[in-house]
Length: 271
Image (cartoon, rainbow, N blue to C red):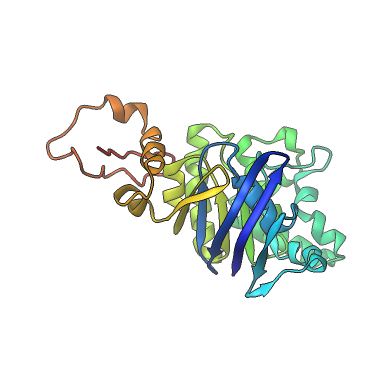
């Protein structure tokens, strides 16, 4: 679906991306993980054309994207930025339907799509009349997801979509999001700092550091066959304090915890 070939991007002396080569398969979810400031969000912006790389190429459906293609291509990609990015002066419904109205969809089509998305994201239609400041964090994220899905895009890009939510809201929305991904079968690229969340969502997990892809694969592959000491260090840093203080059980040492893939956590033990 999407291919990145030798993508580089620098801001002055800072190398945000260094010769990145990645492929995002149709209908698959890829989770980008890694420390802050190491290229994850930049990679999303390159995919959607908000940032032009210094070198390298982007392909969409096996066709290289030319500069004149980006405007139309963005209409095939839904994008949820950090903390949702809703316009505060617009009601939730107007935030969701903004691009459809810009593209002159007829009113009946817009209304039907709006209520279909409300049902999909389990958001009460009455909430759509509220302004963002009148919504809870979870409701704002659902509205942001509705806006990203309004044009029925082929690709969904999400930049830390759950990062600002409290733990209980986050867990509920994680389950709903994964169900939506599976139901719609869209190509999803998700940025998160949370390894457990990456494993919960991702068919493929990509670990970045200093603008480089350190390793990609399943979480089990990153745990069992790390290609660099940083991979193990990053995984161990994600262990919950509760796991660190929990008494060990017979046969646990050196093994995988049964909760390893629980959303929002990375309960792994590596020696």
